[in-house]
Length: 116
Image 1 (spheres, rainbow, N blue to C red):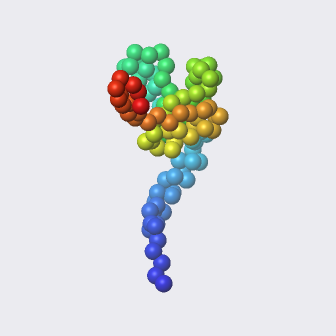
Image 2 (cartoon, rainbow, N blue to C red):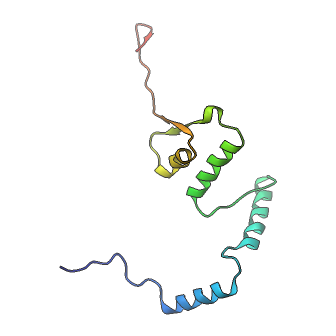
Image 3 (cartoon, rainbow, N blue to C red):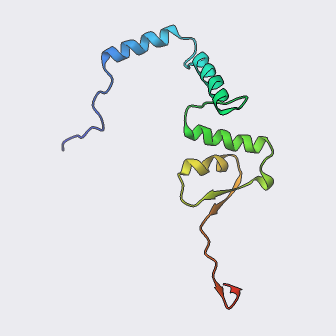
């Protein structure tokens, strides 16, 4: 049986050497000064005092959920989420034990003036 690989070697030896040099020079594995400067400039552009940039949209969703929870902005620890969505949009609320309703388009029919 022929093996089919998902990918070939996608990182060259040159790239490995560059990465090793980068890791040896750095104390932190982030762009803290660059990020702080960018956040500050971005905040001015959008007219806000602060802004925070995170590593992914998934982490941004978790940050939003945690902020809502800690800021006591969730009455009854309940949120409404769309029925068609990515799991990562809903899972932060589940992780934080926040109850969520799945919103669906609701059709209301009137027959003889009464809801059915």
